[in-house]
Length: 424
Image (tube, rainbow, N blue to C red; front, side, top):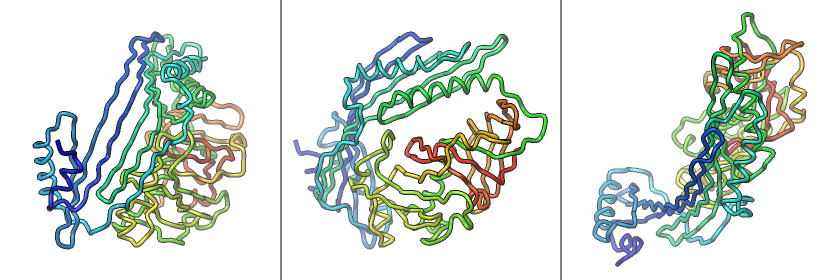
């Protein structure tokens, strides 16, 4: 029986191809009210084929999946269908990455553990993190994954990488006399740091208690607004998105190279480096979906747009050296300790319905679901408030903590202090 690659090469209409193979080995634990109810192991393998067809001045592409049960005749038919679909796609031409081979591992201490030992260690740490009276973890699910990813293409590229990740899903609950409050927690990590895991779950347990106790203020609030890693991640990804090759190619970017993002910096100056790997991030990778090796890009330096970054295809369109589709970022830390922000009047945001960032309309803000407000003397949990500010003014005076934290693909200041914000 002919292999997938042989059948692709045998079809004269196929100009090129790419094959992505993803093998995932998982261990899953399910707890109900602290009791382990189910342990499950899974082993899956997905194979996605992309067919490229050059027609006239254009290049089209189409994808399909191949399964173990797929026969040679079915595969021939899938290739023919993909060719027909690709002929309807009129993309500007570009070349696939050239012949490179290699086997890689994304650094993670998960490799030091047996899967059963790792699952037990994570579970124990999660439950031990709850020290809040009347609070409980009603439901906890632990997922540990080992990914083996391979990319092959018609130019002779063949790369494989192994990476690891874990996810904890939990339902923290606080029980009062007449009512209960529940929250949803999803914590993803690519390396095991027991202190970070403890702090994440303990923080969520404190949050569910605070949500129970939170009040809607009956008087206007004033002071510094403090954002944490989740909202800061959102802010910086908005910046990074504007500097991606695909955004620039579609003429929807705001900044050109050399443009000032911070017009008149009076606080900390912003610096962002896009990168392939951040320790502990589940988004770390040695190469992208096309098999292109990751190359760091310093996209914001000194508060100014310094460079663009992005995929093989859009890099060629712009005449820029592709960096790979970088999915992690390292943001420069500030000079002050995070605890120094908590003085005078301040509102520390714990959770939002989503930080709204609009560089075109010069706006930053959103609805705050939970925050701690300090009036100079006492601190109380509050809800039902919103924050709003002129983004350019906020960025000019923003101050970042010297401590850094990981959130998704973000590695940057754990906290930031924002002036010029209205609380209402």
